[in-house]
Length: 121
View 1 (cartoon, rainbow, N blue to C red):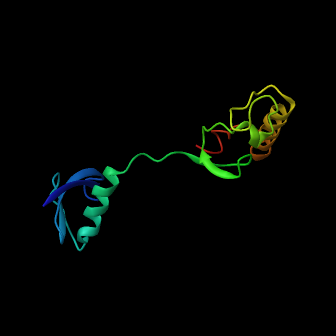
View 2: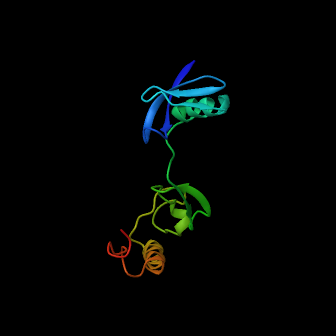
């Protein structure tokens, strides 16, 4: 028998549950849940062992999915100051153009800034 933290309907909170292949019992209120199988227990243990998820986004310069905070190589942007596999300089005309295109894309996505708290709580 193993103990895993899952949502308890009766307690309305995440509580430790004693689990085996056929049932789970909440250690807080004692509610017994049948028919969950060992799949839920295996999933709970697997999720606890996984590394954290990185924020990945499409990079229009690299044409690949990269971590959100990655630095494009100079060759992807067209930077003429640094070597193609190095970082961008941020000051040459190609870097300025890339920055302007990035800001324009951000503005097109949300031209009025952040949403109002009145309309979207």
